Length: 123
Image (cartoon, rainbow, N blue to C red):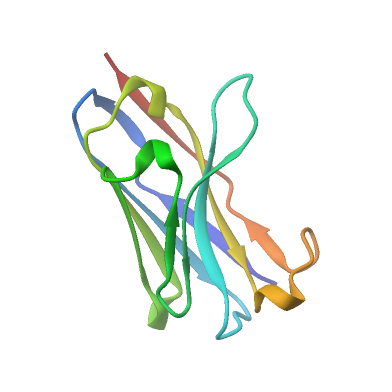
């Protein structure tokens, strides 16, 4: 059983910073990808950033230069440092784990989601 536990959300003024953390527990394969998605009210869930077990990263265009994803693979933990926050960054942020290599990825079968953490940016 894999569990993802997120922390670090909250309320911040525009221009401020927050750091999200997500710790994965259970049977985690050495080749995997962890990431963050977000969902604003009335919107679809969207990718924010991802990082593979090899350290490759990808970001949504809207957060490039402001957000940084990193991980501590020894602790199966992923972080999202969010700087220069904007009101449009307000959303519930979800941690995601693809547990295995991409060639074996079956959405819903070998991936996991955290419970979500609210990030609110006031103007």
